[in-house]
Image 1: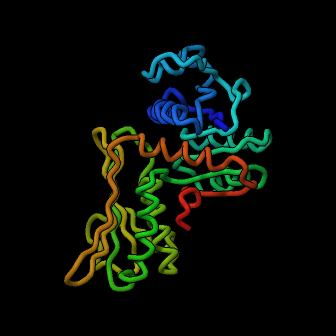
Image 2: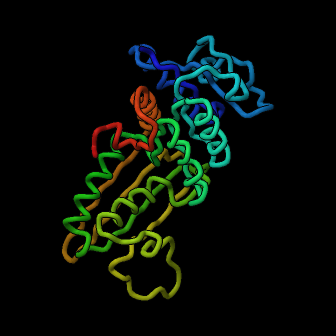
Length: 269
């Protein structure tokens, strides 16, 4: 069975990367791009999705609403407001959904995840295989080193990224905090300036870099007296995320309604 996948936000960088990943998946017989969706009024409406993505004509005309799309699974890497609407549509129409959108407020995330009561939903801050492997490595490092080390997370992304820290950095912090039975909301430090005083051991620090065309880099440091352990992931292409999202879309077919993440897809839990 070749899974029919719709991509929303097709005019953006991730939309086009997902088109490339789906072209590769179609060649392998696992999934194909069945619909490319942009916002109403977009000048791309009606254009050939393959040509827009720089992949050559593929016969998929770009549309401006989910109602005009034929798909088994929707992949959404857009913005919180759009994703909330798209998740509600999928829930009402029994369509599985893969969500890579970041920057949700707490109440928005809760609302978005309500769709998982009715359909299979895979939500992750990062869909790359390497990052999700890092989550498991962070759990191990936190168990072994966490109470004896200062923990700092540094992330870097391109100049166009609008949320900070990145969703991946926050997920890394959550993995560590949960392992150490700490409340990230209470121990996270998102910036330091001036006379901040001595560092408190239980805090988890975050630092953000924005610039250039950096796809995504994350380093977690466990700094103890006399030694330091660093776990780093560097993405050099958005295809690392796109291929993971397509893998998740295929994996969702036949699953029960529920909230899954990429570690479920990879069998890392």
